Image 1 (spheres, rainbow, N blue to C red):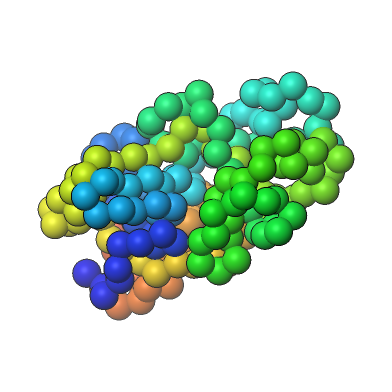
Image 2 (image 1 turned 180 degrees about the vertical axis):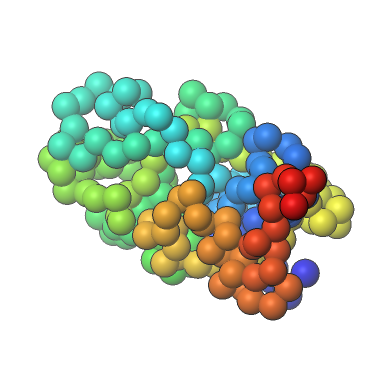
Length: 186
């Protein structure tokens, strides 16, 4: 496993053999990690066939597709952005990314079109781990940690993100990027 600490901004990439349908071939941005308390993250590469206007009353000039942040509380809306001080109250993550913040300001930005896919992304639900759970899964090699990659959070093709992150890591991880979806078909 690469020498990467588990902390906000870290990417958790599901190992190729993971069969859990909630996390198979996913990349999760760790937004919060507190040893002894648990972890919170958002799956970055599971787009939904829904738009912002499907879950919030509009109208919206910026009506982006939504992403499935994880299997927990799928009725909750979360967002990542690169708007810094434009969205007060956001929690800063590495690379100029913010998590959350003043929702009324976000709504206003979407209504007026003062946002775009490369600055604001919405998620339904989240990924959560209880105290020690994610560490145990790491020990079981269910996840591969990668350093923050803010440039990929908004610009990368979500369908290719899992492979893109592994290839970028190089070496044995680049080889894993080519691991077949079903090894029996190889």
